[in-house]
Length: 215
Image: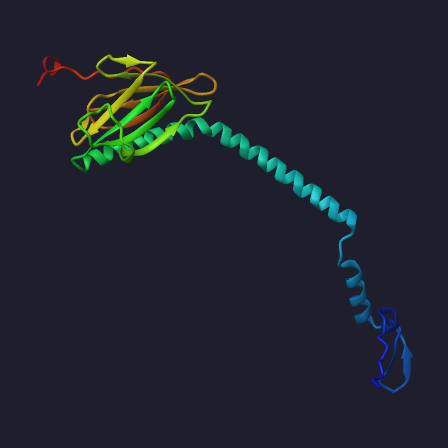
């Protein structure tokens, strides 16, 4: 039969008798056990403290979420416009480095755009395998109209910017409106292939004819 030895509690250990240097038993508190017992008693959280911590963390997360949503909302228009600028830069760069032709179609009725590689002589047909990028704008980003540097403009139909090895077939601008109806212009320069984003409805620099060039 196994004899069980009763465990000593913290209070018993604190008041246990220990022998001094002379061999006499003394009744005094053991500071080490007292400190250990005090630490164990204070190591846990009460239910009230836990609830307070959870409430504070929840409020902090809510404030961060509001700030994040506000930032995303303010940057949505610029992010969408930058995506279109990057798409047009991609078309110009890919065409300049190869003998392939590319076309960026601004679909004003559908409020979207598409980048495709031209593989068919019939430019009116767009095959699924030609599409490289396709996207639509959200409510706070709207295409107002497109104007080319030859004077042609549209606010109701599709507008097409074609790029080849020698550059853009036509330059022009794409005017977009943000949620406050403020205009921004994506300017396509066919002379240097540059695509720039400018605030406002900017004027176009029309290409000069040979008679207007002094040399």
